[in-house]
Length: 118
Image (cartoon, rainbow, N blue to C red; front, side, top):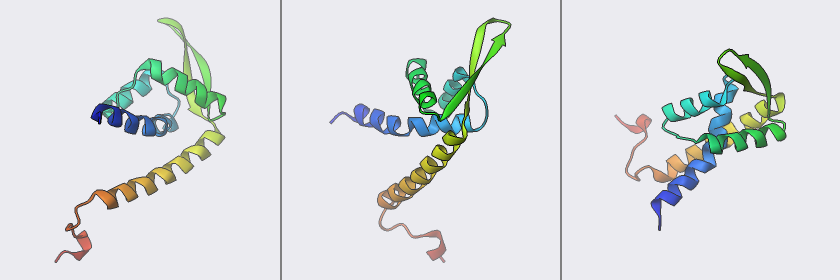
């Protein structure tokens, strides 16, 4: 079994949620998303990001606006729509349930809860 393939699939599974988490914080330029993801140790290539942003925009979860740049072509800044915010909240609930379940299944059996310790 190829561990790198499994790791890649796990990352792909949370990629959309993480990108929406970054955009939810406020209007953002795609390279800022790449930098924030990299800072969190979730590297993403622009070639992966742009198609995902387009898909999210086409689904009505994101909108964008063009901003003139003094150092080159105009920049496209993305923000969440009301529909995107509602979708994000559902994803967050799903993530929390999933993370709790994974934590419960992966903790050692002999690990006591902090409240059970003297």
